[in-house]
Amino acid sequence: MPKQNDEDTILLRLANLAKRHTLFIKDNERRVYGKIEIDGTKHIYPLRSSMYVNWLSAIFFSTYKKIASTNLLANVIQYLEGCSLFEAKIEKVGLRVLGDKDTIEIDIGNDDWTSVQISKEGWKIDEHVGHFYRSAGMSALPIPSNLENPSEGWLSLIMGLGDTKEEKLIIAWLLGCFMPNGPFPLLVLQGEQGSGKSNLASMLRSLVDPNNADKTTLPGSERDLYVQGFNNYMLSYDNQRTLSKHQSDWLCRMSTGGGYSTRRLWTNNEQESFSMTRPIILNGISQIVEQPDLIERSIIINLKTIPKDKRKAEEDIRDLFNILMPAIFGRICDGLVAILRSEENDPEDLPRMADFARFTSKAETEYGWTKGDLILAMNESRKEALEQLNEYDMFLSMIVELAEANKKHTFVFLGSPKELFEYLVNKLPNKVSRSEFPDSPASMSKRLNMLKPVLREKGIGVEDRRSNGRRLKKLFWL
Image 1 (cartoon, one colour):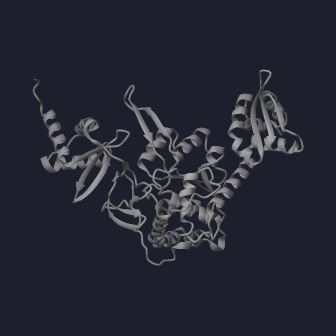
Image 2 (cartoon, helix red, strand yellow):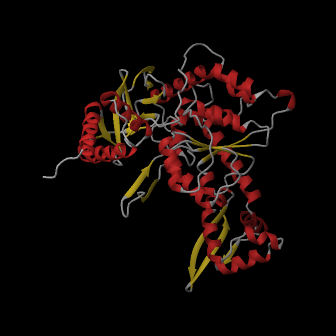
Image 3 (tube, helix red, strand yellow):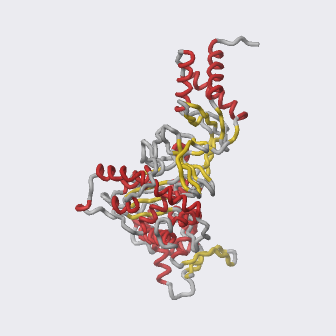
């Protein structure tokens, strides 16, 4: 039996100390969390987070009056994680929002570790019921107020939106952010400089998931996006000019609940998995979202430039918003109570984000909206976005022009992908436009398939056919 050295002894002491003061739990993806008590309040942190490591260092010093080295702390965390993977109980662990069809719990993020607990009976503030972890940078939500207040028209008061479909869509999007497990449509705020889009994005985030860094830039890899999602309940990307096809795909998956797996860092074949949905805000000047599948998952708000005579200093706007925040958050909680309480049947003509539309439309009566207003607003917004896409997407506009030119014929086009490709290339306005066009019949066919929902919206059908061994594309009016 090898003799223990001093370092081994210290490691075991620290590990045993941690075990005495920590309840270890793990989630479905086998991530381990530590539940600890600080000044009589229960806290939960990911085991590998700086928050838990700092606590571990502090209790070691408090007990032994020695400073734990970085290497010692890392070894203890590895040991505790290894034990917990086999011994810890699996629990549902969430960031900011947990719930089901009967209850919604929102972590306020304050030092008391309390939450807003919402049910059919109403809402209250109390100690956490669910297992909420916290990440560095999280800030506290306002304590909701249910007093009489002028918060109902705050978007009109601050942003000048008035009683418009945009106001309804933003309120509905805020409610949808608290739908347990999503899916969450992206909120896209578009407008010229001076339209207040960045300010609005900050205010909306502060009502759902306030953070020290409330706006960031979209990362360059999907793994980094999911790491951001693990540490932030809401993601907000500022001044986004364009999205690559890959970035659009990432956001689609994050919006509707996709997963991501990759090799765990510093290992040869260990897999690390992320599975989550997150509310996302994008803001930029114009036409940020160009891929049809992402448009289907988005609520796009076009903000008008604020006239000079109606502009206010950002500090004044923020001060006014801070005064109204508790009341605004209180009305969001009222809306969530109404949603949980509602026994109404599903509305007709559900749009693509059907779960979101079904959830949020149950609050229409609570906010004094006419029944069906919300789905009408979603469909109008989506139609406007598709019309904008037609203006920016040269290939789409050429297909629409081809269809319009053959409106009186039995079909628009019937031929091989190569024939369609060559026909359209010859119709290109100039050589510069060639770079914006698919580079081969195969890529054109792929693009055409992606645009099927958009073309269907315009009354144009696309079919793949075979005749005498030939693969054909048929375009026709529905």
